[in-house]
Length: 192
Image (tube, rainbow, N blue to C red; front, side, top):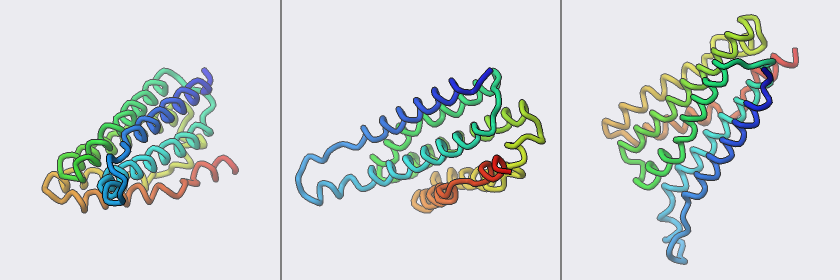
């Protein structure tokens, strides 16, 4: 079957996720800079999550350019990814509302870990259908950046739980930044 509905549905869900996240930004009840300043952690968590969702959308978009067809496994793997992405507004809100304390940061890191696992699962399902010599398989290669991200998330969870929530948050931000620059592997593979 074709990939058009999968792309359209995914784009719609991701747009809703971003909309829900921005709706969590509440207008301050005062008119001073201090009132606005109090929303700093909420805004910072929103920015981090917005960029993370953008990274997933960008990479999902590139990955689907290498796809010729989809099957039921790919559809369910994509739903698995969308499920974990759809929890980002909740974990983002909890982390921001609680000033990046340990448990919220650990849950946020767990959410990002599950998004990464789901993305890797989707990637494996696409490669499974299209073969180990497919454009995607060749572009991904050993996926060092993906593996480094998984390890960083796995380190950030206990780090936050042990009371080092700010260093854990910095680690999560670092992972986001390494993915912020669009991944050119698939673009290069498609242009060959």
